[in-house]
Amino acid sequence: MKNEFKVISGFLFLNSMIISGAVLLYTKGDMRFEKVLSHLMG
Picture 1 (cartoon, rainbow, N blue to C red):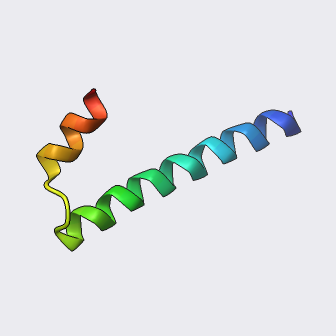
Picture 2: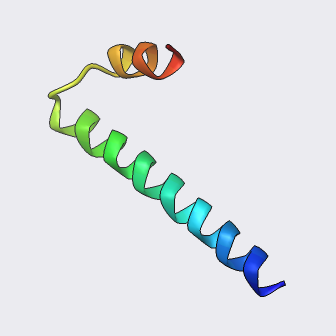
């Protein structure tokens, strides 16, 4: 059970870092939100 908790918490932490980084770039205005979305969608 302890290993699963570590994996889940690590995954959630990684996701929060990615989301906060995207929001930070968007609020700085260096990147347009549509451009970020199209890059993420491939």
